[in-house]
Length: 248
Ligand SMILES: [Zn+2]
Image 1 (tube, protein in one colour):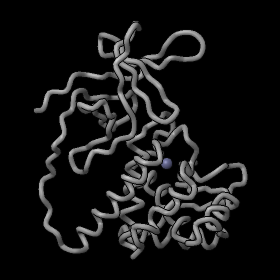
Image 2 (image 1 turned 120 degrees about the horizontal axis):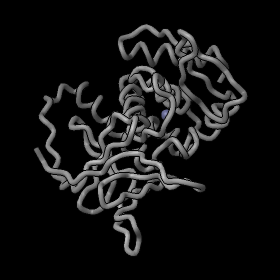
Image 3 (image 1 turned 30 degrees about the vertical axis):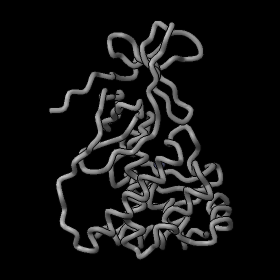
Image 4 (image 1 turned 90 degrees about the horizontal axis):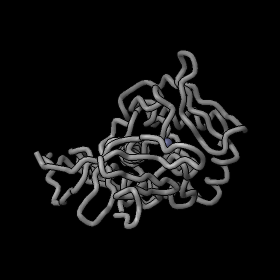
């Protein structure tokens, strides 16, 4: 995919959001994949052309590249690029949900909306992103939501039949996460189905009570509900709170 084609794809994606594209689209060989960031007053979407080409070769559809670009546009539209530091799994799932939604609006089948994640898996590297299964759920949820809207299905208040045990807040991350009765760590925001992306296990014979894990991340929770990140050297770092959940 050359730069002109990528710019055209970004224009088409944003147009389906009812906006006019004001992004700078840039090739960058130094990246391993694709990324959204702000530089000065510019909102940039940068990608490694070799990464997109390799994905197009194995996916056999241009929609794979479009879905990656849509995910990055989501980071800009949702304001995530204002705070580029930190690991926010809910932000990644929100952008996957957006890519599924917008591809449905563009007339793409669910199978084609999912093809990028299926051929490339962790398209932006594993560290920042939740596991593949959670990302597939998020894309599917966005796609199905767009389809319901296009079919004029009436909106109903969303009721979740799931028992949550704990609510998890991470420092600097506006998302809310929950731990359910089965020990699944889920992203949930009252307007969508919960998406499982990790787990919470009870620790025995440890100074800590619980361990939260997803992808390559591991945090421990002490008896006072503080979440810590264990660093390889030196002191553990406080990264959030895990409080017992009481349904309001
Ligand atoms: Zn992302």
